[in-house]
Image 1 (tube, rainbow, N blue to C red):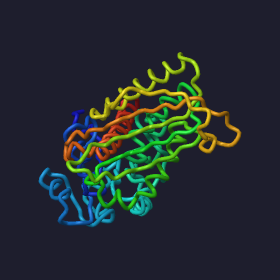
Image 2 (image 1 turned 30 degrees about the horizontal axis):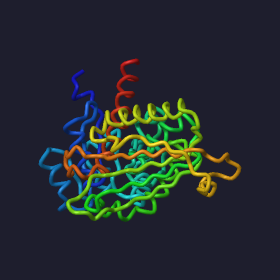
Image 3 (image 1 turned 120 degrees about the vertical axis):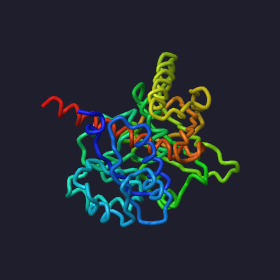
Image 4 (image 1 turned 120 degrees about the horizontal axis):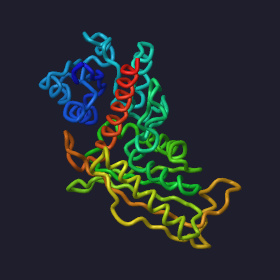
Length: 322
């Protein structure tokens, strides 16, 4: 069997910045995937025009147009790069038709997936959610700390260029904070989580910066050394599929002053944490389609691609085993 015939066919709903960048990644870098359709609602969008020039079947009639496309039955995976509200509609139409969905919106219909943390946990789920750009950047760090010692509270601040925040991102700010906060707890392992997003209007545009604060009990040097080692390894794990992901400065672990009211952040009855862990990150995009400063979008498309590649690899392995 040739490599081309072994590829899993995929469609992308959403011909904006995220969907177009994801299409370019599939076409240029994918090992197991084949672009079968690019779907939008604006017939004049750059994403649909680029897809057509690259020989990818297109429709500007949304998910209904996708279903009507020749070859729709051969599509196994559908990426949704629209909005949380639109994904609910799209999923309601595609799920009954047996299509696997990878959701890049904050809709969170399916389980959360952060590839460096739990990519193998939901390979058979019909719909998986890639959380948010801030979640993809920061939840691995929370998980790395929680693997060493319980995290009583984790707070993340994602600062992105205002220019990289399109209408979909701006319309989903509330869903961003709610979805990310939930995933900090359910995937990252924090007992309590909080997420903040900042749209930075600086010119020239700045690349994505992320700050992760964790409240932990780490009174001995050995625990602190293990935290640093775990976080450093996790940064390498994420950088394996997001090359522009890196530490901005050394990991900081500091004692909490006795007069600092951290009891307001931790759950009732929880022991008072002793130290803060502060991790400062930056994410530079690969510039496949988007500018390099749009690392927030690049990490989302890279994570979604990683998930689809793993699903496809498992499908191939299962077929070969039969």
